[in-house]
Length: 115
Length: 112
Image (tube, rainbow over all chains, first blue to last red):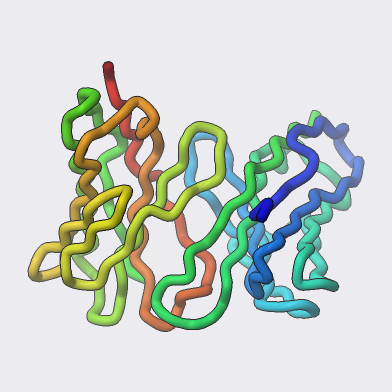
């Protein structure tokens, strides 16, 4: 299994440009998440999904959109890039089979700079 | 979910045990303690979790005090590859799949 994969690894955007960060998992996990991490800080949740066709906002959703048309993929869309969106973006997934722990598996991250 | 407090940084000599403390004085009876770590520039990685009993796996041990208000993650023989930020997270029993709430964690530096 490849686990959670993210593309691209790095990207530089100009203010006002748009882009989609790709995330895919091959573990048949129901739950998927997008986090962002600013320098020296913990991760903050942007959006998450409990299954195909279902998404919900996290702590910092403004400026982002998501869709979940398949179990495997959970892309994150930036419509009008702003310098405040310069960050490292992590995608994660978990099984969703219930119980106290459903380990979240994280991708390697996408480092985005908006100039 | 209960709030956690961790020291911002710690050093540990290679080969020695690393003991990372976490305070969670407002933890409620159905909340678990989880530990994740983040090695530089990588995504976080699950380490261990516990409710009230001490737990051990191939990566670490988790010691939870009897009153459950604090816990300690122990890396028994720290190596340079254990240098990372360690996050202590408290989550409720029914929130196994809810998003994780990360604080700033403890930056552990293992020194040769």
